Amino acid sequence: MAKIPVGILGATGMVGQNYIALLDNHPWFEVNYVAASPRSAGKKYKDAVAGGRQLVKTWRPSVGELVIEDANDTGRAVTAANAGQLAFVFSALEMGKDEIRSLEDSYAAAGIPVISNASAHRWTEDVPVLIAEVNPHHTDIIPLQKKARGWEHGFIAVKPNCSIQSYTTPLWALMQKGYEIRRLIVSTMQAVSGAGYPGVPSIDMIDNIVPYIGGEEEKSEREPLKIFGAIENGVIKNAELPRISAHCSRVPVTDGHTACVSLEFGVKKPSLEEIKRIWSEFRSIPQELELPTAPKQPIIIREEPDRPQPRKDRDADKAMAVSVGRIRACNVFDLRFTGLSHNTVRGAAGGGILNAELLKVKGYL
Ligand code: NAP
Image 1 (cartoon, helix red, strand yellow):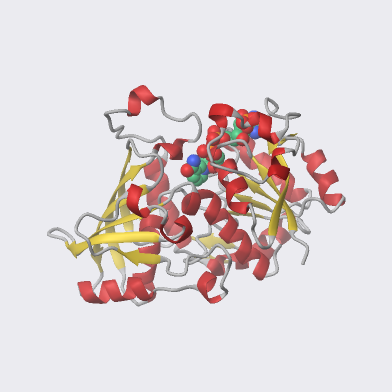
Image 2: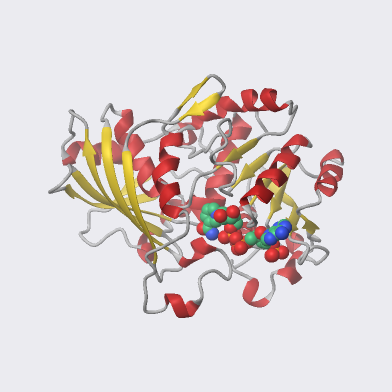
């Protein structure tokens, strides 16, 4: 079977380079179109990301030879699409939110589906924010989105912030079993790669912790509610619970976002044994469909008292699994645990690829 030609907007950045690396030898998709800022446009990919700008170990030599397009030039993408060289794009752009929103809209309006990592469209009511294991049913909004905008072929689907699957997936597994979660306090310790390249100055990060990441606490508190929400009257209506309070800090770790959680259940409260059983048995649509990028076990329990740790656990199951440990009772709420996942893989490029695999199997791509 011929592979589907895909493009990457923001191909030279932290997330874009992870897309290039993860799509090397992908069974369904092949990178055929790379785009970035006008600064990189016209250069061969291998030259634009040479030296210190190379953030991943390897990429396919043929991708290195691709000439970078200007991501703002949708006309070039349309020409490639019309020639059968581009079926859809992954968006990993870092620009102003309004600029990203209007650029992603123009790709979709031109008939090119956009699978995005950017936050620009996460609050657009008819755009699904997908964690493939948690809300695969939100893909049902896509026909309504297309109809509302008069888009025949294009659409926009996004993935959430890079840290929230570390706690949202475990929460969902419990909610699925009928356990209401009312309140939650989460403290995230987020890796430097989450800030893109070149990111936070090293002088701020070495021997230090920065207890502020602009906009991150709001995303950590609100995005799970959209993901847990339901489609009603052509939009995604947010869930009301749990109420979430987040503290987000940047820590001197290269990859892997950690989340320490305390939560309160509703009337029905599971035992610690029941919680562990639910998490270790949790499987969802990506596992049933055996999607190529899906982890076999989405939630891996670490029983050691000092795990999960970024260096030891971020690469679990192709860096696509969430590792959970320190599962214990809470003196203030009901339950405490620590979740960890790889931010540039599960939380960015890997999560985007898994969403695209889901959308392909469902017939949207
Ligand atoms: P990054 O390393 O700064 O890369 C940004 C990319 O955007 C580069 O390819 C850059 O091209 C391109 N770009 C910048 N200005 C542009 C312009 N005016 N026109 C067209 N392209 C432009 O950022 P990143 O960390 O990869 O993040 C990319 C997106 O993913 C962001 O929206 C971010 O919020 C989101 N995200 C990041 C992570 C993570 O862990 N890093 C996780 C989840 C989501 P040049 O190289 O030519 O400048």
